[in-house]
Image 1: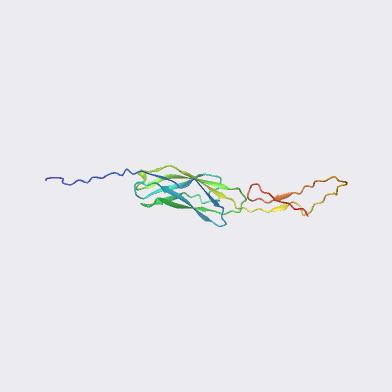
Image 2: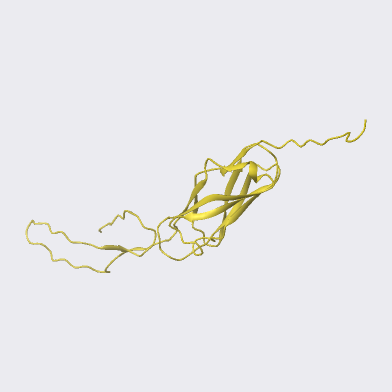
Length: 178
């Protein structure tokens, strides 16, 4: 045998996989101190290898920088990881406001097996920050006077109940007259 006696053959991987959020929605109560909320990114089976995907903020009613840290998050998968959590810092505030939302989206695959990956399925996620802003309920005046009616005619008297700003929404208050 003369010349080349061995040859190396490379078999290109053809094991595609999908990358997605594990759930479409999540809820967190507005914290009293900065609190991290885990966002889980998942993948289907396929080729094993390391890769990254960015979790990018794309909308919602919450204010980036005030209600949450709006820095793009990167999920880094090891060769055999199927789920990876990234931590979203949720900030407290003293502003009376309703529930707010954060919308995130998966973007920008990178790494050694990124060419086999597709962002597919649940590609966006909405996180609701439940408001925790307390409010007070009180009578608008400490005293109230009404003239005693003459005869058997009833008289209606308005008693105004007020509230300070806080969580928005309907509520009921029972007023007991002694």
